[in-house]
Image (cartoon, rainbow, N blue to C red; front, side):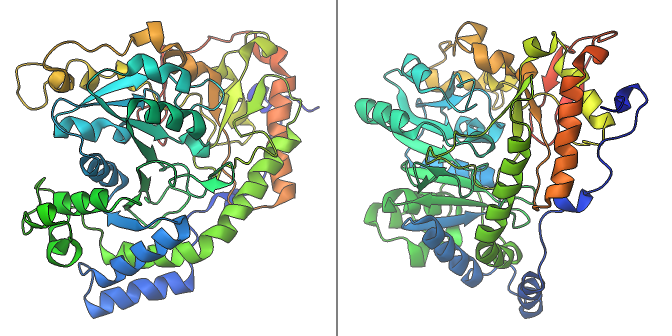
Length: 445
């Protein structure tokens, strides 16, 4: 094996940047956008409504409602579920902030549950600890495309009469026991921004089989639809002005792109899945790392593998820090390799100290009547608090080109099997790993 590039040797990766180009822009997509531009219909609804119908058909649900962001889709979904002042929702602490922060503007409170160390999704074993008489819903995040344990979660929700909101912003097309994520809960929210596995530029989608949730979401932030889309009398009675004073309409340039993406996504997803599984199969048995993917033949899939990660086991590599490990991988040409993932939200001041609306108390306490409502901190959220040194970002291959994927796999194997050469001078991990967003992971010493 050649000398590590980190120590002056040759890089293991020499090519393959085209494997990561995203999104794929097709002539049909360009033509669809030009038609919208030339007809001056950017803010109309006809193309967006078509996109919604096609998305609902693709997912297999009754209703889909397009939004300008995935965050807006979560916001409307929470309102659609009836979450309001004094209510609590349960959410995994280790996720992107948009999974739960919108509830604060509804007067609700977030209670954080821990994650499973293998799946990185909410741990069903920790959910019941979080339930009180004020709990109304469980937010499930299918993190990095990994389906959460929906059977266990739905059992708990049914036992306690709780709603379930699936955040599918990472899991477009992922399967849980051969059924698509986003079809299990009372509602689901998808981000469709340009970095996601199903990108349309910027946008989001709410999906549900419940007409009441759908119409409440329209009433909340989609005023232009009130007269034609509202049918439930008590909701229609408030038509004309958006109840939440929000305007979450998706522009039709993105809707046009979305319609084309739906035509291509199945084939693109299959190629991504083939490439990513090839990468991990090539690394089978390499010490210190494990794939973040479901077992084969489990009926679970990773969809488009958004933000793919690997598990890191420092003890198998002589205690080598994940920071040093990733530095060595970047030196080999694995450019986007970074330690960590989303920082645990229970550690952010928004969910402890910040008074956003000048209430004279932390906004996060609004839903608990001003009384402290602890999620448990490090005492109960041990995995969320300590996961940063146990996961790292791996290449997200959008094309299957085995020769180049083999180069990347050789780079990882080379670093892992030469770990002893990296131990001298290893400064260890910094105080902070990870970041509040998956695309902006930080390393702070």
